[in-house]
Length: 289
Image 1 (cartoon, rainbow, N blue to C red):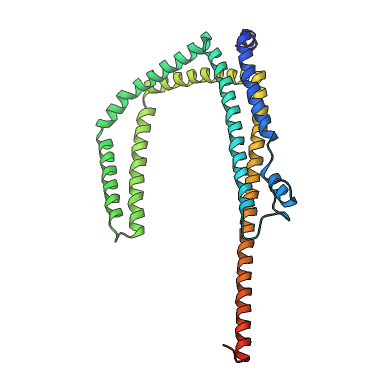
Image 2: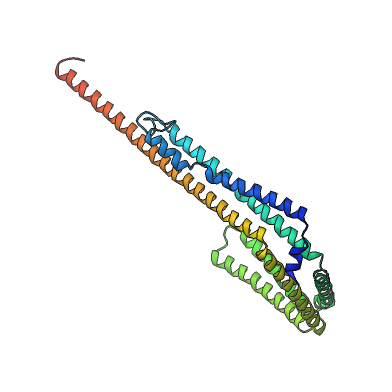
């Protein structure tokens, strides 16, 4: 298939609409790149920038500053994820457009029609073999054995006195019965020449469809708009990764700040208790109450 000929047949109006769509995606990614990181916001707070507490950092006994940074980091993660989703949607539209172009080609339609017909022929060849297998005494016995093994396992599972070893053995019986049934089904299918021929024709038809799919992938990789979308996706994903990293750092710093606040509060309580004990001892030595 001539992929260059497909590209030459695109209309100017379609090119304009696709360019407008992709420009909007690039603008969205660019806006994400311009967003300040949560780590930068927290750094400004420590340095005494806008919104910082006097002396930098967060006030004693409160974590509002850190919590604000975490909220900002979560917002940036949400915005970055939206940017990734927007680029992914644009890429999907490009792929759908190329697929639609390919689907209008005669060889694409013919290959899929042949595959569908081959699959139907294979299923039709299976039916009489499966029907005959269901009537065979050995297969009937194997199915009965499987049913009995399953019932035994269920009863043992419901009995609290069942030993683990016995339960494992019963489960193995169920598994063995299933393996035997699968073996019989496989042998019946492989022994039938009609099924083998139908399976071979279906495999050949599948190869034709896969070859056309490979051509579609090559056309997609060669499409300039798709290449631009790939670059936009890389940038959007980088923004998302950085936003997630910033959120993780802010959360870790908040946990550390909370630990410090707890330790400071405990130290203050211990100090007050020590001061109170000292005053009481002085009063007792002086004859006071």
